[in-house]
Amino acid sequence: MSALKTRVLQVNPTAPEPALIQEAAKILAAGGLVAFPTETVYGLGANALDTKAVDSIFAAKGRPASDPIIVHLYDLAQLPTVAINIPDLAYDLARHFWPGPLTFVLQRSSNVPANVSAGMSTVAVRMPSHPVAIALLQAANLPVAAPSANRFARPSATTAAHVLEDLDGRIDLILDGGAAVIGVESTILDLTKEQPTILRPGGITLEILRTIIPDVEVVTKHLRADDEGIEAPGMLLKHYSPRAELLLFNGIQSALLPAMRTYALQQIEQGRKVGLLLPDHEQSSVADLPVEIVNLGSNASEVGHNLFSAMRLLDQASVDVIMVHGFGQTGLSLALWDRLLRAAEGHIIEV
Image (cartoon, rainbow, N blue to C red):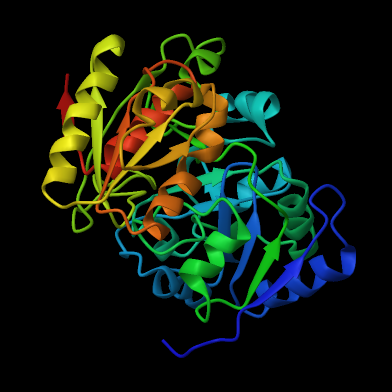
């Protein structure tokens, strides 16, 4: 693709400047690409009703056409313009959780070009809560298709610097509204079947959803990019991956660090540079090792906020292998497990 001059505009994350937002909205209306912050990660936006503009998202990211894109709205009244046969449950959930990190898979309206949904008859839709995202969507007055603003299969972008690292010269504009708050993507809930199912865990947890849909279940799929019938983003086996090999450890908590320490020493003996992603209370136990350590924080929310940025920091340190362990599979930790499993391409070292 021909190189663009990617501009970066600093915007106030809580009270975005109208003139800057209007500038970005004009780019979207003209078929261009704008990266912008959401509460989850940075999104790469294009007019969701413009087939050519949506194609440019796939080209900029190097994203396979089989991987669908979420459509972003600013008002619930827009929902019938992008979806049909909308169940009452979708409206009930939207009133509880929108704006916020919950995406619905619904039946796609003919207004939405097929390439948004990888040729499927469904469409993924959400309403972000970030003030910059809402202001941009309102100013553009368009449904905006927006996957994460990074090259395909890389760790999602949670800052404007991450977007620039991956997409400089490939998109028109980046609205820099500071770091994304949550740091992992939205929960994706399929409402097209009789049994509502979570296709991707995310910012709204299974436990919270069960307060409204007691029988909701998580359906995990690990697909290849050339598979057909991918229902939602974030379902590929290789996703969110750093350049370094990522090793995911799982097992009894007390055994995890000793196992990681042993494995790290083996890797070092083989001449490999090792990076560790650890919560702050675990770092002292490996401080004597010649490794790069990045602090993930002290709880699941902090780990989620820091995870993708930490992977990128270790890539910048040119490590050969990154070692990390799971943080459980309840609450937000389920979303963290999902991202780590895909970053590790499904390979788990059981302790």
